[in-house]
Length: 220
Image 1 (cartoon, rainbow, N blue to C red):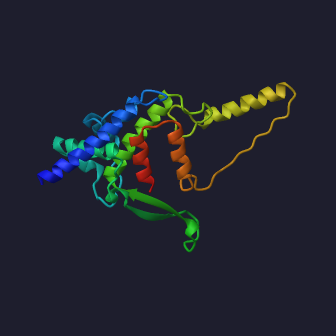
Image 2: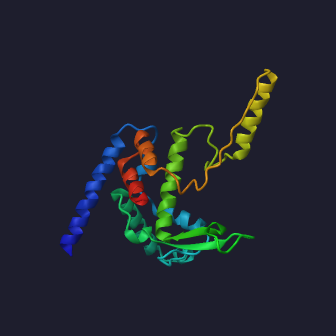
Image 3: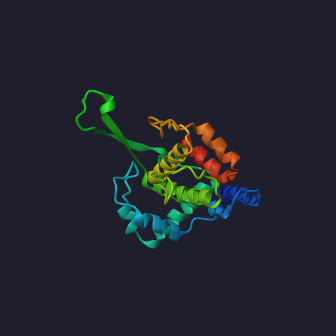
């Protein structure tokens, strides 16, 4: 058992060295936003805000974590830190239940008449939330997002885009120009994300190796 513990400690120390190298590389902003260890308070605040939705295969409801003793939070924090540092995601975290909700006034005999809902594991969702919050903050803090993007950004909405379009069209009309707009709606946008392209962009923006490794593992 001692030998196993020493092996695990050696592996974690190896990835700690990679984290230190990541910190010394050139980055667009404060890379510590992504590389700082997760704190118990950070996870506690995330769990506190979670609604008691249906759990996935791990069958752990958020309310159980919200009412658990402090030692559970300490252990959970250690697990999540190790997962992100090593880029390793336990296989059970990737398992999920999928349920199909019928769309109103649609034929029950067509697959297009159902909306799939995936219930993933609670612990995995907490880890996802931690990284999502950090990545969003880092991207905003480092000005890596185009000013024209409104989706999935705090304090920005489609209203801003509508105002921009109306303003541009009004300017064109005042100058005697002709204006045109092209609107595109991507079907199943989330399901058709080009994973290799996404990872390439992370590399191009010089994201830390540890974060890219975790996301790569998550996508495979």
